[in-house]
View: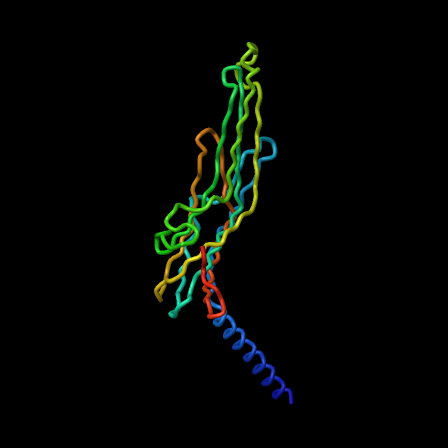
Length: 212
């Protein structure tokens, strides 16, 4: 009797496993990569530490099935950090800082068919412009170095959906990278942790395609 129960239990578990596999296939394939390195803000100075070394996540390879209406939904998600330090003195009464992080998704090395890039260099995930002016400091003869200072440091999480369709059947490589926008006046940035997920989807006759 115990043997019969054991056999029935094994058959039931096997049936569940098989049904789960069929469901996953019918819903489209899924791939991902990540880097778990975290950014941090220094308590006393506000400086950014840690973060992902380099400017990209590991590539993701996706095998695209045949048939019309096949598309990829690509979602890079990052914690991003921005640091600005505006300093004023009697000889420099205006301070302007501008820094941001831009994320780029490429399929097989190009962004031509990736929405919304369509050949551009990516999407802004985070950016800060900070301008401080204090003209009265020019009259202070005793303040030569730093008379006034504003330090700002932030960490926040961002994600964005990119799309690509009309891919030929076969294996395609998805790459995610980022670069700094501005940042030429002592600003700082940080990225991490970060993930990218890629899901293959299909537009059926009762769905609308990607519109712009």
